[in-house]
Length: 212
Image (tube, rainbow, N blue to C red; front, side, top):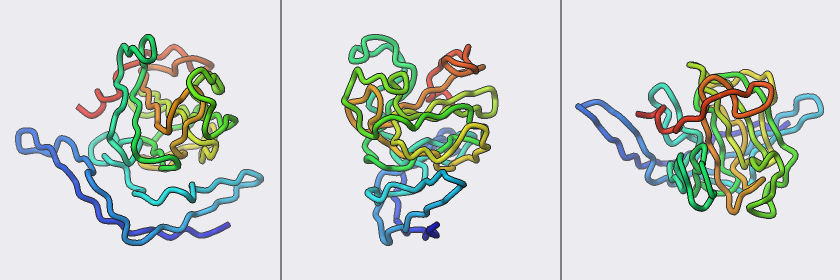
């Protein structure tokens, strides 16, 4: 095992107020002053570590409020809804520009339902249906009957089914696994269950509804 050491960074934030109250906080610039040292944890035969190629922020772009943000980036390349590129309904948000290997965070506390870490970190591109097209992913049951999928991650998933996670906990790292053309996070949310499988039956909704 290797002990981790926190890095130091300076962040510039954009704060949006509505009726005199903070509505949203966005990180617009991050300058790294001191590089962090990756922590390596050994649990039995399962070994996890952060991506050594990533040197940016380790703080979710949004942490205040009921729901945190799953990435250090708030740049959305594809929104929830019908999308021509996908040729149909896109059940989530595609978040990018934080870089391959950047951390993915749990948006709230919850219980890990299902994970997949058997796909290549960088896939062969769109049409690669490893992990049902989601590549390496994590499903979490959050409060208020919200179920979330975090997909297209690297194989370095850091949580396991049955594990309890906390808001802002790192659950994996941004990759381009499954049906993907570049490093990004597919972040999908459902009410009442997951999209499919043992916990299926959920109803998809726009993740941005959590932050309004």
